[in-house]
Length: 81
Image (cartoon, helix red, strand yellow):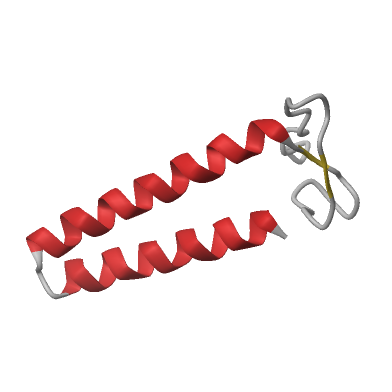
C-alpha cells in the first residue's frame, strides 16, 4: 500500500536525521532535514487524491479509495472528556 511506503520512508528519513544530529554533522543533518520535508511533501501531495476508509478505527489505513481525485478522509476523533 502506498501509505505504508510513504510512512516507512518518513521513518527512515527521521532516523537518518537523528543519526546525523547525534554525530553533530551539521551538513548531514541539514540534508537529512530536507529529506524529511520532501517525504512530507510527497505524501501530502498523494493524500488529497485518496480517501482513507475508516474500517477499524480512526487511524486504520488498510483500505484507500479514490474519490473524484479529492480527499474525503475523516478527521481523527477525540475521546470525550
